[in-house]
Image (tube, rainbow, N blue to C red; front, side, top):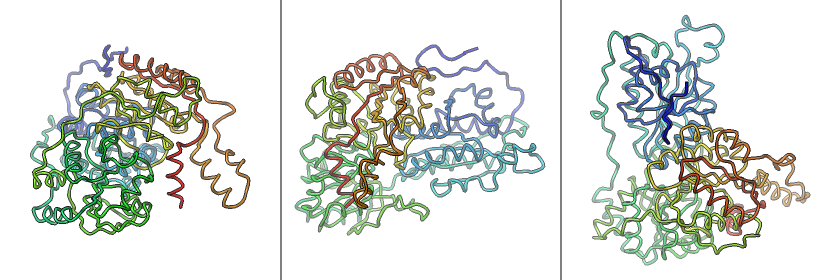
Amino acid sequence: MDTRDPGSRRIDRPVETEIASHYGSDAIAQMLRALKVRYVALNPGASFRGVHDSLVNYLGNDDPSMLLCLHEENAVAIAHGYAKVAGEPIAVFLHSNVGLMHGAMAIFNAWCDRVPMLIFGATGPVDAAARRPWIDWIHTTTDQAALVRPYVKWDNQPASVPAAMEAMIRADIMARTEPCGPTYVTFDTQLQEAPLAAAPQLPDPARYRRPEKAGPSAAMVEAALAMIARAKAPVILAGRVSRSTEDWARRIAFAEALGAGVVTDQKVGAAFPTDHPLHRGAPRFFLGDEGAEALCAADLVISLDWLDLAGTLRLAGRVDAAVLNISLDHLLHGGWNMEHQALPAVDLHLPVDPDLAVQAFCEALAIEPAPLPADSPVCPAAPPASSDAALDMTTLASALGQGLKGECVSFVRLPLGWASENWHFRHPLDFLGYDGGAGIGSGPGMLVGAALALRDSERLAVGVLGDGDFMMANSAIWTGVHYGIPFIAVVANNRSFFNDEVHQERVAVMRERPVENKWVGQRIAEPDIDIAAIARAQGAVGIGPVTKVGELQEAVRRAVSLARQGSSVVIDARIVPGYSKAMAAGLVREAD
């Protein structure tokens, strides 16, 4: 029997259960509630069947409630998207070693993107005498966390219920402490299924407070302000900063008081209004010409946890400015992966939260914050394109702008070739950035997770996804539909892994081989994939394919109406392969 709530919040409601006995997994479930975890994203697995039962029958699938996912990578991506909006983690359960391996790519994304996430796993019985033949052996790993240890902040495999309680509290503290990131705790099946003599007594998480955000000392503020006072042409690189409207307003006031140019980054989301007179160039994946010119003319660069500071300064050309770097990111740097980027040369490094630093500067200089940003309608910068024009990366932005006119939206994802000069962001939730790890397959899940976090707001979650990204992870759409999560996915369908066509073209030119062959092994055609039909097969509204500007405008307007009524909508927008002119220029700069 389907016992889901009939309204928009479709939570699977179990029949009521009278609890007569208690188990280790009941304590784990109860601790999730004590940590105020709202959701648990999971693909079910026998290794955590005890926890699953406790979530259902001990807690009634409420606070937290389960989000059933059809793939572990989607479960992690949903948690990632949720954290991008809420700034708070939800929990993910991954089945044994096999589920962890499925979810590993998405965990790497969350690590690179510095988002808080609570990942819990389970293993077959550590006690070999308790293992069932075959299946428990292949699903038991000596050191399961070793699969992801280089890209989680902390991991643990507790051996008792009290140790499990402490591990969960520590994992929560560490995931939420800046710089944020995923943590991983594994529960032995025997620990979960062991009977308890009485109802579990939990430690109070409020007694185990996480560290306050690291702010600057008076000496740090004095040293930084001395650099700022000497500057005649400062530039602010606004990088990994908070989604807080108060912090946004302070950044504006700080830049205005200094007369500083501001550069933002398409990889990390909206950090400053892009139509502000001080904003220099459209946000891009790689530094654009206007940003480069601003840096080369600067005498002081203030980096607010900018992603790849050294690489950006190198791309700009000759930058002779002093550099003030404000970041805690060095605390996470290890040697397994190079996501820490090149080592920047800096004149002063403040190891503090960048938003607290800006707040301290404003207080010291008596700078009043700017007005808080409003949840304003979309702000396309491109003029309307002809309704008969074919869709490409430039006309796509124009058509979306017309279709979303008057609506308040959050862009969860924009594609690599997006014409960012054709759109303005005026609020920290207008654009959430990329996925951190720069792989493929995270978009659908992150869209669903962000839409879940936005469900109580007036904002619509909109994702412009690539067709390759959609095809790798489209089963996340089912989760969104199942739980009544409204969103709009526009699939920019160029029937190709086009970014790699660009790389093959470069190689062909370098080696004096036929450029005409760049499509081989890249094109997703013959047969074309019916993306709208895939969406409909999962219960979503599928629209398309559309090929013209006017068709996409009408499709988006229809999608808005349906999403406002609670629907999940996918639009197949067939676009001409290519990048926007500005993006292509940035790729050339990056290649050089």
